[in-house]
Amino acid sequence: MFKQGFIVTVLCSSMLLAGCRDGGEADIADSAGQDENQREQTVQEEQAPASDDEMEEAEAPQEEDGEDAEAPGFQYEVNPDTYAIQPIEGSGADPQVALLTYDDVPDGHAVQIAEILAEHEAPAIFFVNGMYLESDEGQEALRKIHGMGFEIGNHTETHASLPELSVEAQREEITATSERVEAITGERPRFFRAPFGQNTEASREIAEEAGMKLMNWTYGYDWESEYQNAPALADIMVNTEYLNHGANLLMHDRAWTRDASAQIVEGLRNKGYALVDPETIASSETEAAQ
Image (cartoon, rainbow, N blue to C red; front, top):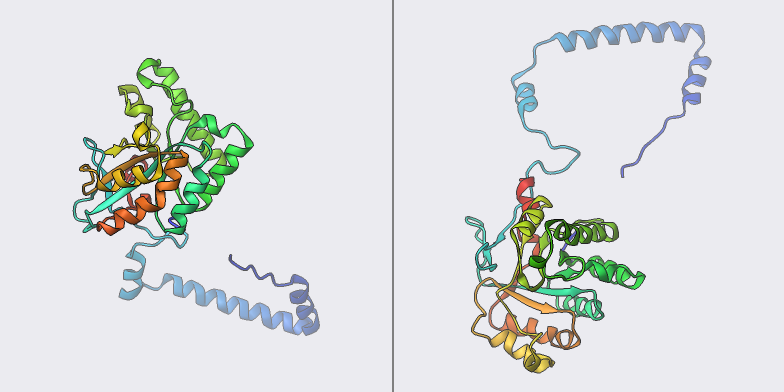
């Protein structure tokens, strides 16, 4: 949804050999003479100076394996100070956008959330914890979410508070989850979100080394008791004073969040906000590729 043979023809050598045999020795001699003339003509053509058109064609940049030589363009980037999603300078992208993100995936309701979003053609990032991918059920849930075209982000292995861990433990929390995601989906995460938004110098370096862009959020409410019901959550997510251009919405894999998701999508769109596709957001990995 949000993401996207050649035929080999084999000529039978026995048929070619049979053709030679049917022609007899005279045909073989004639063929040999023709081959010699062709070789001489080929040598003359190779030694002849190239025409201007041929020189221009040779100097023109070539595409490799039928793929575009240029790197794919990205329209948005993460503001490193506010974590808002903003247009890349010169892209001409619409600034009135919001990004949907869901943490603690897959912890019971993520597949249903993804299905609701898919029905509304609403893109999002699902940030996963590696501990939920240890079971067959969790792995299958991630396959389904990824298969629907949603971006998968890294939210560490055990949702630990990173400032309380050693550098080595932080590295294990981050890299182990990326490895699990890649083993299941075939793709490594491009975005990293620290539990509780607590990034450290080490986590920043580890994420950068792994080609991941740090992504916290601009607002979220679904962990607060007064918003742990769908109507209240849908209302605050759309009508909060913090809803501005590039809003980065934090939500979680929870039943009330699932039940509010459709209303949140509709409410944002009714206010004139487009939901930004994560594929259009540059990450450290994609920036390096360009």
